[in-house]
Length: 208
Image (tube, rainbow, N blue to C red; front, side):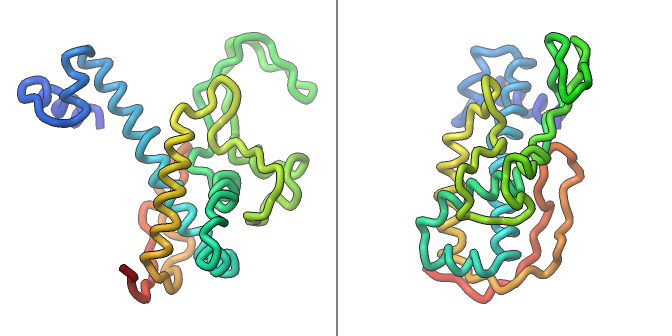
């Protein structure tokens, strides 16, 4: 990805055109522009793609919920929040560092130690969520960590929610899915970002 973006950024500098990279190029160094492009690609595209695919997969695995959703589009809000808990596109955060000694359950994490925060595991903590391995769009008090938390809460969470609330209802309004053709589907080879590489499905038809 790095070599491709480097070449693309250099091309945009030499031959500006419409688009974000051309607009940002005069104000940023090549290194900063490349870092920004990677951030936007991963955080602004990859995670949303995985969230939409994870929602599709989860609904096809739960036909009773899918039937409810098709009859009641307003179910989209709690349904999407439950998918973000149940099958979040970001599984864990591996780049955190302890800024001081931290005591957790009788163990001290020394200052300066790398810490991996297992967000998906926390989303299924039975001490926080009743019956956590069950997909339940009627779940109450669903304060999941699908977008992290605190000062590191996802900057793009509002936009991601808008994208999901537009894409998911429209997808299931337009496409009449029949069944999954492969379950589980092939997943991306990435431990942090979770989502199928492909989602083979049978489709009965489309609506206008």
